Length: 154
Length: 154
Length: 154
Image 1 (tube, each protein chain N blue to C red):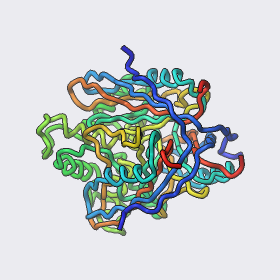
Image 2 (image 1 turned 180 degrees about the vertical axis):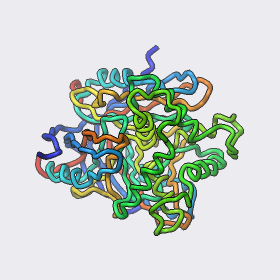
Image 3 (image 1 turned 90 degrees about the horizontal axis):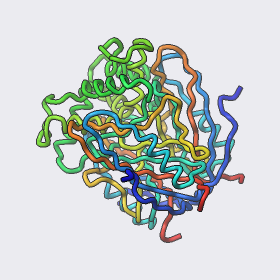
Image 4 (image 1 turned 90 degrees about the vertical axis):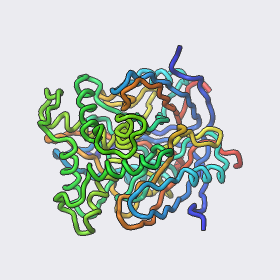
């Protein structure tokens, strides 16, 4: 049996973009799956790909489990162990949580994409899209959303 | 001398997608480069980009060295040091390897892209595409493949 | 108030690619933002997305703070702590800095994308695009640049 499913072909002719503003409440994971799906609905997306880009260097974009909230607690712990505060960083002018936030942003990254089929995000059943805030204080974060593919209304 | 090569222009008009199913044998790296190349052949891909998306939160997608297999042994060791089992994680209902798997999935990520030129993957000579399995038990993993660009047969 | 901005629609019809060669001077971060912007100018890019792909397994692509250079010093330190040399790696035939370089490449990744609006990179004000070199010796690194979207001259 081939490991490859049947192939679906389509056209690419449209691109749409918008900026999603996310108000974080300090360190933690803030789910944006619903807002991203709403963007796809508003543009009448059919088949294509959704690209996400976070315009910041002390937060990150993550696709992770959306079931047990304890998972996000442990993800925060894991990142703190990888990049602890007060660990002899040279860059400390913006507070002890700033340089660790840059490290976490580098490791997780600020770009993602998600397939779109028939207007729906092709996420696995346990996957959600999150902005991971790495600063202690609440921040206003901007995520650039872009869809490339075909749309129903044009 | 300019660091930028000559520029190649083309058109984008097609999108194709398929699901690649990967049976992992437990913790380790499972190469999918050949299967991905076969997808490009089947759709007659010419110039464009291949996008990969893994629909799971306890495995990841990685582009790594495909020469010395010892490299993948050390990559597994490195991930275990970053996210050890039995390290006081709150989320432990699915076994001691579950929460470390989520952390490794976050750090490596679940999305990749590879340039495609004349139907061939634009990988470097030492690069292979892998599904990294982070659970101890074998799993069936789904990778969504998407090609955006131009195809020979349309 | 909706967290979603007004939506901008466009067409996708062009793809352009070039190879950017980056001469690194050994371990550290080498900014390529200017060269990438120049690529967009040369092809007359308008709206779309820029994709970057690094064809190597011992370096990585990173979007990080471009203000205080101390940040990059600390990022190097952080990566050394995550993947130290002489830490019992099995793969050691290419020198003590080789296996740590593969680990850093896996964690940071070798693929990125950046939105493009009106021909300009949609980076945040503190963001720069870097090739992170993880080997001690200088290397010549190749970055595949691809633009998908609309161009002024066609």
